[in-house]
Length: 327
Image 1 (cartoon, rainbow, N blue to C red):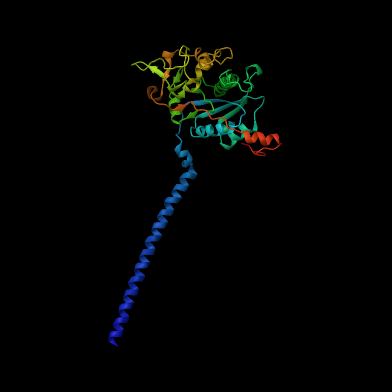
Image 2 (tube, one colour):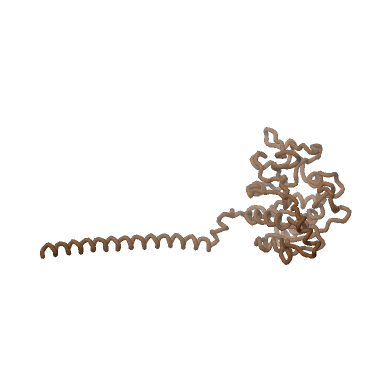
């Protein structure tokens, strides 16, 4: 009998130990869950307080960059503008000036702006290229100057906007801003805009551009004192400013002080950059950026023209694959 009692007591003790262990383990797990929940709630609160996506955006109080983008209707237009809009979303101080080569603004471009959430950081303009300067059929894209009408329309809007802004704020000195011609078929690193923000009043900033002019990179050539001596351009190096449109940006005060500075149909092929810059600066006075012009932060890429032979066949039969869709 005593042996049976001792056997039962042993089982009771073991059972109590197991129950006690499970109780302690449960309390510990609950604390961990509460701790994890607290951390999770902390993250959720920080996102709710604007520390989520915006936490990755620098809090800038510096100059505004007016990014000028000429665009025209073509199969890849929406794709190009969508890619560009995602870059602009990451740089808070960019104001996007989109100018369509058309007689009115389009719903497609309006939708790109809306879907990217850039309605408050953009303006949608239009300026139609005169027929005699418009590329026809199978004309190569270099045959006639492109974007002249649209860039000039953007400059007109920017000058008017800056003057109106200064008058409205009663500023004795024009607020510092910068104008950059940001074509929709290039590839841009967000680091480029960190460099553009450094452009001083009265200056034109310059930097290298990759994959352009038959070279891996076109770049300003500097002397030992860091002054721009010239450019390493292989294509028409005799140009006053042999550089790409993506390779410079202009302090807006220069554009206000020189209203004659604009683009022209009356210049030789490849001289559009020189045409506007000749009114604003000289090479020696340009401000070299991007690690003394050693870093490539923009590339002159181009989207391949899509082959739409099957689509053309459909259209001949009165059909289309994108019926009711915006592509």
